[in-house]
Picture 1: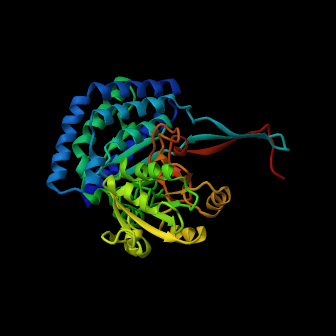
Picture 2 (picture 1 turned 120 degrees about the vertical axis):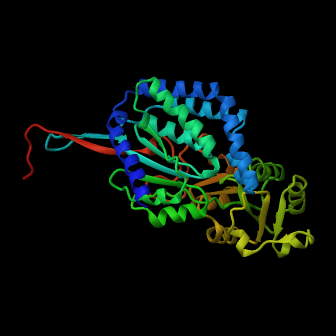
Length: 417
């Protein structure tokens, strides 16, 4: 533990020392760094793929699930997407210094509240090496120091990416400690970091239930939870069949191992083409888990259980529940949802409005895929993650959400009576 303390004390000290320099950088300098970072990511594409291949090979030896291997993969297309996301962040308006309130008080004092960086952001994540760049870039643009702790399964990928980022900072004569990577994978170092509430301002766990529970239990630092995605889609009696098929296929099969993929479909018992809908999904490789009424249509299918309705599958399994009313759909969703994403497929305006007003998740979708719940799709360039909590930020945590406010008052001798 003493080794952990010495190691994490050093990280915390370096982060604190870098904070003042980074929070005062001009926008043009931050954008120049990010543009060079995007260039260097592309220049090092082959090296990134080589290092990532080591993690993929090790992951297969450890029998990582297909979902985790998919999250781990960095191919040419994903590396190009990663570079593009950095350029998108560079193109976003800089939130630092934005005035959110400016007034003259009755006593003549000028009051201005403006956006400032949070300070030091600790992000603990699993599998996804793209987070190293996404969070590092978002933190840098918003004037924060990022402490990044990726999982051991992505260590080679993360090390080359953080090396590229820190080398760019060095080229621009900016402290490399704007982004700090925790290169020791022992979990004891996480515990030690989570006690640094004086140096670290916020911690974001991004991974499975085990990681989030662990961080929440041990942290003295405020936690922004990015919990699992048990996402639900309600197929109303009036749903358009063609829209429903396309949306469900996209929400389940386009990338099943991510948090915004659908896991449960709640379907009205009188939807006229239920069997056709289920057949279309089966034909595309979806494993359907059905309740008793639907098993009459497909008696060879597996029966859905209460435990499975609460699971984030992250694969091609999809559970179905039949309901008689929209109110029953609400009860099911409220019981099993993780508060991430819910969608309604309907042509009934009243039911759509009921859905939007009575359900309370981070994002609600009408006649479109839950896969759109994403920082890039929301116009944030990238995201720290998708928050399922209700404090500080809810939904994709983007550039502006890495800021807080401070208030400045300018007077001319006023005193309070």
